[in-house]
View 1 (cartoon, helix red, strand yellow):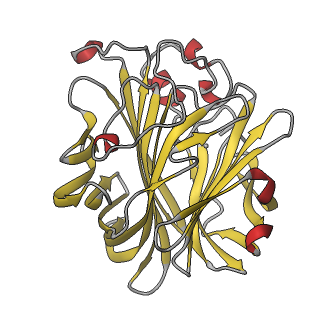
View 2 (view 1 turned 120 degrees about the horizontal axis):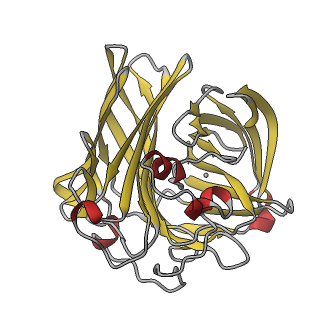
View 3 (view 1 turned 90 degrees about the vertical axis):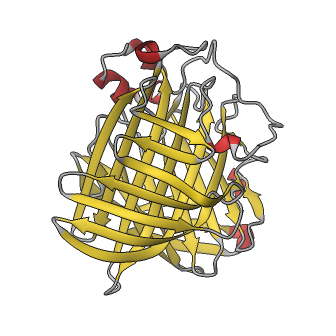
Length: 360
């Protein structure tokens, strides 16, 4: 979730690059607080249905398919991968055909090691087949980048899938397996983002096991590890006074998972939320009053100070950890930029995960 910058959950940069109107993005962080007139609302009580909800929701303004992976190579050296596909509607329904289609697609891919961070970005116009998503058989693609199901993909787990991306100086290909169902975030998939009613529909697959290859500067290595996919869609996910967010996905060594975010507001009253995901797939929401997210160290990145080290406390669970990045320079210098990279953590619990920082 960047100042006048953007990440996975915003597409102003992509739209500007495609000469679409900037004024639509004048309200709030990256325009995500703009009124949602003409688009479908996000309301409590939705019944999720799979495979349909793995696919696109064109009546909503924005959505994304967002995957991060914490991996190691054959020597045990850690690395991280990112693969994201975003859809943004430049105008409300009804849907238009062909080149008149109002949907813009944007994708980011990245590789992070301790010694390097590489990223790439693609754009496509909707309606012409260059990018898109199908629910069954599952496939999400933009040009040659893809997250694609197989003949045996289970709708409940969204596995197995294959993941591919390539750029001038890196590429990767992974197979992702999972034996637990996707997890609904928030209140049965209704993820509130402010006290004023902004929200998204949100589910995750935090149980992916990943195996494949990573190539950097023409050197290919085998990699394996854990991956996490987030799916969200909304028409107005943020309030106009929310300036950015700090988001973490954590793989605990116990097999449990933890998602946390803190939406920052101009008045200093942050809006935090979390979800504890047990190893068996059961979940328990963690309310803001029980979440303490404290920046502990900053790094100079791209001309700004970013809080790349954190202390996280959840007193009700006797949970206290310190998080450190694999590479503090994991800056996504895309059309609208943000920080996104793998982290490790230790304390009452140990493990690895991903951190995203926007709005700084």
